[in-house]
Length: 122
Image (cartoon, rainbow, N blue to C red; front, side, top):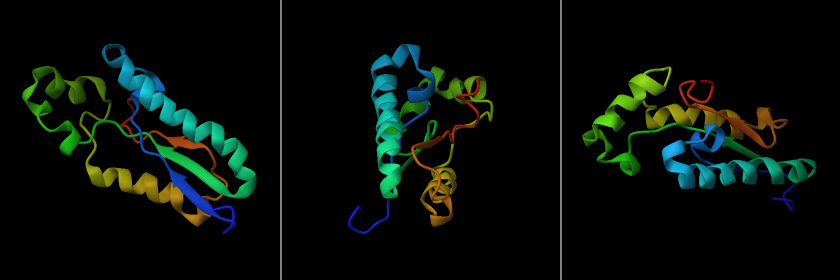
């Protein structure tokens, strides 16, 4: 990317890296590390136009969450904990990803965009 004079690195991680998750501290710590791998190198890379950004999605129902619909607590979570009242659909992460990778967003470096139905705000 430096040789080309331009590039984008888009890191996907989930919202517990921003807000924590008491029952899933290891998971929250690892996704929090992804946030820091977005922010910290982003400061150094900005002068090289090597932009690092991260949409911070909340649970999306594809394969990684398969089977969680059988768990009553997992079914209750979106309605009780996510202000939007539902899990994200996979396509809803596309918009933030396009925003973060668009050349018109070249001044966004080390940015984290919580695409989480307002979960991290509570």
